[in-house]
Image (tube, rainbow, N blue to C red; front, side, top):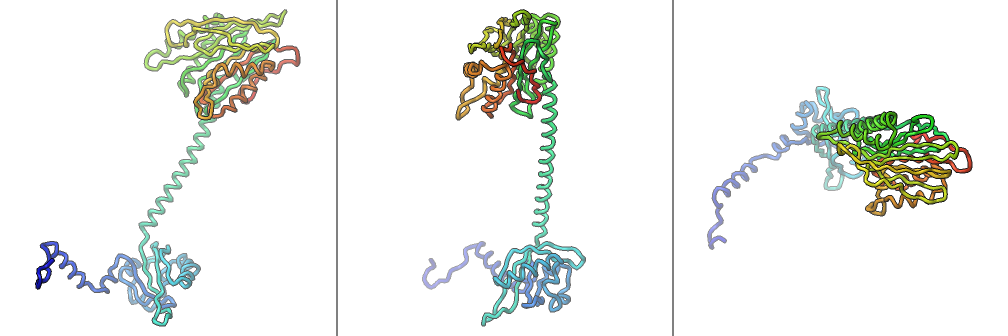
Length: 434
């Protein structure tokens, strides 16, 4: 507070600077501010005749004041499209509301170019309420137009890239499906007195799986079969799958003993994939020998780290065929593989499967595994069915588990038909249904 009788004084340099700026503002005339404003201004009579226009807008359009004031209407400054929009939308709205703001129009330049603008207008009234003139503010929207055009260009590029990616993905799926099928037999051969069924469930169509199976003749009375799962996914796993399948075929023709065949595969995989990229698999390899007199089929097999096969008897008895102690194929230079034997009579079925089914996640929160015992109980409930019927039921089970199945699953069922209709031919896995 100032002492009595004294007037306040400015405080130092800041006060002096403020006074200087205020003085400079007073020296500016309203006309100067109007003429050199960063936006365009113009006033028109109610019929649109231009009565006043600032230098900024004249400079944008490349016009002379004397050629505009009193000689041109506001619509004469617009492009054909801008004029049409003004007549059909802008002017009616302005007449109805008395003011309008932020309307996008295009103005034409004297040299033939055009400039995008945002226009705001207000009708000024006299003391009696009569409309006298229209005051209009014009903002250069060139930067905004460029920005919008760039956004539109980027959007179109993104949409094109998305379409291309979708097309590439579709082609990739087709190529992967073709490659996946090339790793599996197109159909299984007919085995006299034996019914077979297979199914391959793909968990992710854009990812190559490593499950495999095969069935082929050794001679007139013996047939070899195998089913397994290579570790990993993708092209490298597919290469291992291909090597595994052809190695087992070659090994079986040389010595069909199941333990010997898996031992040969173990040696090949371990020698081929030693070092920084180890590859291995689980597998069951077996031999079928049919007795033509009784129709019964002797099964001898060996397992290397694979889930045990299920034996489903025609009378409903269902249990695993134990193969304890079999090691993963390809992990160690010397591996132990567990043999097992059984005999299939009329109505009996041997079921081989990969762990994509038993390790499927179930429950509301997908926290539980389906498990071996649930599979045994499910199959036991369908024990009276043929191999095709069992595989069809399992196909429905896989579909019912939905996204809980996050790994591929291969199924191979081999059975001796019971008394009834003749066996159906082996399923073509490429159709995807048993």
